[in-house]
Amino acid sequence: MKPDRRVPARRSPAHHSFTFPVPISAFLPPQFDPQKPVALIAGQGQYPMLVAQGIRRAGVPLRLIAFEEETRPDLYDSFPESERKKLLVGQLGKMLKTLEQFRAGYVIMAGQITPRRLFKGLHPDLKAARILFSLKRRNAETIFGAIAAEIEKLGIQMLDARSFIDDHLASSGVMTVGRFPIEPEYLEHGIHIARESARLDIGQGCVVRKGTVLAVEAFEGTDAMLRRAGEFKTDGALFVKTVKANQDYRFDVPVFGQRTLETMREAGIQAAALENNRVIMVDKPAVIAQAKAWGISLFGFD
Image (cartoon, rainbow, N blue to C red; front, side, top):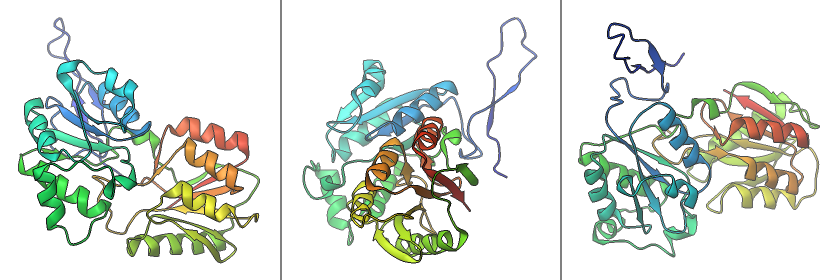
């Protein structure tokens, strides 16, 4: 059972002696200080929106670092000028200076940056160029790991990317019952393939059918993999999403959302298995409602 991180509720001036605990998130460090600002480094999509909402509900001070052509404009517009900064992808030196200006105690990364920017469309400043040059392998894990190290050199703690969104994680067992029942034997095979793929740092998902691997996720991402699997035009396909055995939960945590569901439907894939408490379901209530409406089976495995 995960620990329950709680902070004292704000005291009413008329009742100085009474406080009561308010839960924030089970994924925060034990000594989390809710008075220190959290800087949200926001990529694409709704995931950063959910994190921002969770932080605001908890009453924790929030700052935003956004990226041109990546971060949603409505998220950026929800911050006052003094509490936000928009950068080009690759401006690491400027980002570090901004975190210091924000007096951030913590940083949380949420949302994908377009994968092709690792090769084209990157605008590295001197700090970023030095880091990239020093890396023998350039992938999400090494690049974001190097960025996290630079942030923590400033005395700023990187948070688990699941923090503040506890209610938006895959849960154990049957989440929806669809047209295609998930058989244990084929589920076990899919989990094995997905975990081996993750261990080899290929990707974090696969599509299988009755013991046959139809597709494995690689650099192109989940949606492209689902479309490839859909080209076989077969029924009984199962999409499995997992994490690495040594997953660094500060970044690159697998995500499953409504866009994934839409791609599954278009590809004719009617079942998905997601690792319990480790795969983020972006707007979980909406995802579950849509899966039920479309007859897509969702299952959480341990």
